[in-house]
Amino acid sequence: MQVMQDRLDTLEFWLAEHAPMTYAVLNPGVEETGLEVFEAELGLTLPEEFKMLRRWHDGQAESEVTTEPGVFSLPFTPLAQVRDVWRSLRDTLRQHPNTNTEVAALDAQVSHPARYIREVFLDPGRVPFCSTDDWNAVGIDLNPGPLGTPGQVITFGQDEHDKYVLAGSLGEFIDEYVRRLEQGRVRMYQPDGDQFPDDPFMLELQAASGEFVESVGFLVDLFPGFGVSPTP
Figure 1 (cartoon, rainbow, N blue to C red):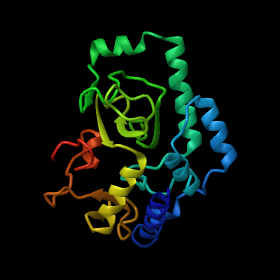
Figure 2 (cartoon, one colour):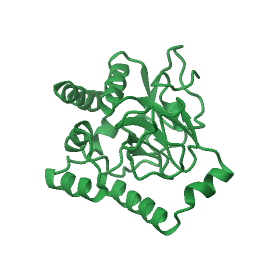
Figure 3 (cartoon, one colour):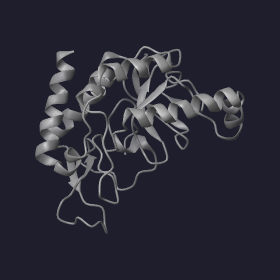
C-alpha cells in the first residue's frame, strides 16, 4: 500500500501548488471508527485503498464558487453524503423491488466491457468517491458482473445508462490520474462568467491526441484513455 500512499502524497503536493482553490476546500480525513461504522452499515468489505483515500481527506467542503472545483475532475464526495445516498438507494430497492426491471424496460443498462458491470440501474455494491450534484458518480464496484473485479472503478448514476470500467482498482485509477498531472496532461481553467476570473480551478485531463474535451455528455468523457473509455 506504500505506492498508494505515495500517490496520495503526490496528489496533495500537486493540488497545493497548482490548484489552491481545490486544495483549500479539502476536508480532514475520516477517523478509523467512522470507516468501521460505514463498512458495517454497508455490510461490505471496503478495499484498503478506499479506506486510505478517506483517511487522506474525507471529500471536500462546498466552496464559494458557482461551479465546484473537483479533485478528480469532479467534486470529491464526503462520506456522510455517500452514506445518505446509499441509504436512499437501499431503501428504494427494499420498497420497490421491481425498480431495476422497470428501468431496464425503458432504458437498457449496458456494461463496457461486456459482463464486467452488472447491467442494472441500482446496485448497493457501488460506492462513489466523486459525483455530480445530480448523483452521477465515479466509484468502486463491490458487486461486479461475472467478468469484473471487486473494487473496480466504474461510472454509474441516473443518467449513466452506459457504464464504463475506468480502472481495475482505485489504486490503478489514482495512479493513472496522478501520472497525467505529473506529465502535464491537464489544464486548469475558469468557467465562463464565474466571479474568480483570475484564479482558475477546474481540472481537465488531456486525451492522447493532445485534445481536451469540449463538451461532456457522460462521465466517461472526463477520463479519456482510462480503462475502456471511448476515444474522444
